[in-house]
Every structure is written in structure tokens, then in C-alpha cells.
Length: 157
Image (cartoon, rainbow, N blue to C red; front, top):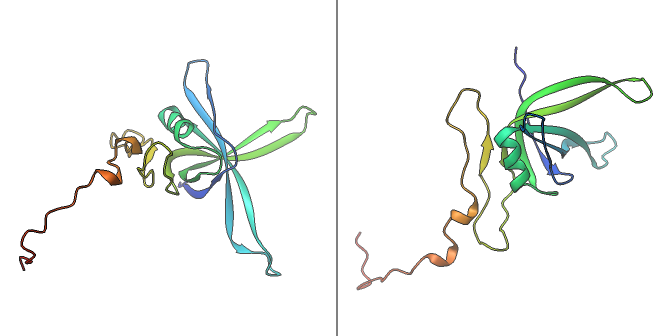
């Protein structure tokens, strides 16, 4: 069986980081995902609000680097949960259990001119090749490049 989902959207609020009783980090957030098509009468595109939950290091990564309005690309599996509300009614909700999360936009931090685009973090079950990239603070800034002397002006080719 195959259960894999990849979505891209903007966070509707800052991620909420909590810890289980065994101190396992878990982050909850919602992505606003635009549909690829508009309504039949040519109106605006509709938006789906998709709940996501990330665990362990992925949860900490999301909590640290993502804020309301950031574009995120999330891959994981779709999980459907049945539950009972306060009035005793049966309810059903769907959420994405996040395996990997990527920055969907590039944004420069106020303190650094580095680019966050393309960095990601995720869990790969049993795979030690996690795709974490260092935050932009370790990237060289644009003003650290020096001009080269063009010598006698002749090109070597």
C-alpha cells in the first residue's frame, strides 16, 4: 500500500511546539494550500487548510525556522483520525504526519544576508542520510567576496 502526500502552502500561524510525557517534541501547524484551479464560474481559486504534525527533530526544526506566512513544502503520510466531540458527536479529521519539510521560499534574515531557500529537515526511517542543511548564518555573506585582479587584461583563451 502507498500513502504519500506532498503539499506546498503558507503557514497560517506559528507552529505550536509541545512535548509528550516522555519528552518527545511534537509540532502542530496548518498550511493554507491554494488549489490549482478556480471555481467553474471563473472565480478565485479556493484554499484548503491542511493540518500537519511533525515529531522529534523535524518538530524542533519547524518550530525554530518557520513562522506564520512562510512557504513550506511538506511530505509525509495522510492520517485520518476518528474522535468524539464534547457533545458526544462522532467526528473525523485528516492531518499530514510530516516526514520531511522544506523551505518553499527564500527569505533573508535581518541579521544576515544568507539565503534560507532549499534547506530542509526530515526523518527517513532507518536512513542516516537526513537532508538537514545548516542555517544561513553559516553561509558566507555577499560582501565577503573580493574582486580579482584582471592582470594584463588578456584572456587566457
